Every structure is written in structure tokens, then in C-alpha cells.
Length: 244
Image (cartoon, rainbow, N blue to C red; front, side, top):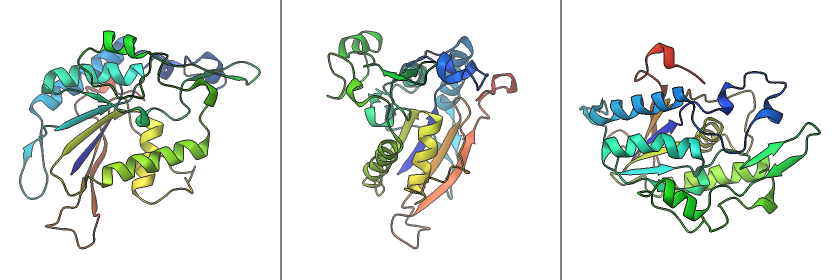
């Protein structure tokens, strides 16, 4: 199996540069900025004819599965990718950004939001496959509030376990999701959880692409072998569109 991690394009939250007011100014489910849409278009154009280099021969970078976070910025980033590759995206609720859907007021009190309903998501993204977790009243359980550390670490481990079950297949899987979630996901794959070292962060710029290969039997000497080919690749973007 080949696994590709693609971060969403620049969102309206990403341009809130004042760290002191970020929490109180952020929105719970931000949309892409104009630049974010440009980034998504560039990565889609790149993926259309992209040639990658596994060992020992080059091959076309064509996904067999495209999974996307249920958050708007990821859903909108996946749209041009799906159109360019003629592939049907599937929403995977477990790959949402850490924390879930929430805002924080000046007193530090969190408010949770349900997110897009099944009808809203079907209307905005008619070709997407929706799981049962996308309900009539949204996909985030507001009773949970803001997701805590133990919850998102466990969620990342669950995603890695689901993907590891496909390690011996020929699938080419792409996830369109989020920087902080990808950081935790990579740590789960590299057995760096549950410690979750906070002095280490695997960064992804907007629409940055990473690639991990599993069970390359030609090269592997142990079961469940992982080969990291690259992290945070942004060569599909002109320098003026590099953002994080």
C-alpha cells in the first residue's frame, strides 16, 4: 500500500497570525481563502499527470481511494483533486482536525458545534460518499465539547490500525486532512504514541504532500515495513503560494 497525506489549502483561520488572539478569533469550521482555492487547484493539476518514483521504476501517481475529513476546508480541497483524477471521495470522520468543532471565548470557555448536516453535505458535495456518522443534525457530537488529548491520540491510533490492515494491498490511498492531525498520525505510525512528544512536530504546509509505503516485500526484512519517501512536498506550488 502507498499512503499519501495531503493537507488542505489555506483557510481563513490560517491567516490569523496573532497567536494571542487566535483562539478567540478562529471559527469552528473555516472555509478556504482565495489563496487556498488556488493551492487546491495547483495540487489537483499536479496530481493529474504526476510521475512518482518508487523502487525501482517510476509510475503514475494515481490514487485508488481518496478519503477526506468532514471539515469544509478539507472537503473543498478534495473537490478539484477528485475532479482531476476522476475519483469519488469518501468522507472519513475520524481524520478531522484535533479538537473537533469548537470556538473559545475570551474567558476560555469552549463552545462546540455540530458541523454540516447530511443534507447540507450532500447538497454541497453531491459526489462524495458519506458514512453513517454524517447525521441529520451534523457529524460532531456537541455533548463531547472540545476533544481532549487522550481522545485525539486514540483516534489517530485507530486510523493507523485501520490503514495497517491494508498494508499488504496494492491500494494507493490519499487522505485530505489537517496539519495537527497528520503530525499525530505520523507519530502513531512511528510508534511515538502515546507519549506524543510536544517538542517534535511533523509539519505540513497548505496542500503539502507526504508519502509512506507499506510492506514493500522486495525490500522489507520485517513485517509491517514502512518506507517514508518524502514529507511535506510542495514542489507543485509556486513560492508565492507557500503558506502554513
